[in-house]
Image (cartoon, rainbow, N blue to C red; front, side):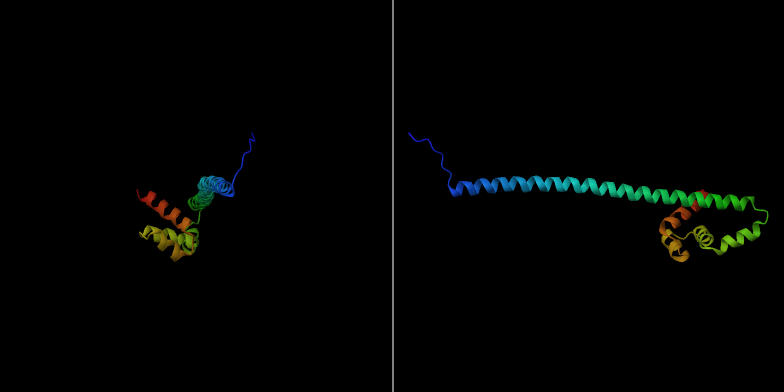
Length: 125
């Protein structure tokens, strides 16, 4: 008795298609999970960078405020601040303008305008 195992081209083609389908499904699953992880990482990194930028600007504003409060000739110093874009931004925020309007009118970034408007709101409350 001859015990031979014969595979036809049709059976070989079906096996190849099944293997290829499993490989493609696995590849798609890995790409999908990798993409969501990658986006979360980049989003958190951008948020951390923006938060650091806001903290630095807040620190600069606090230093400037301390200088104003300690200045002997505060009228001249206040005049200088009122003439710059930040002084104008504080003035507009005090008048109740929203963030987009403050940023557009003063030529400052949206994050700077958000900080100034938030500080003005906290000052009023």
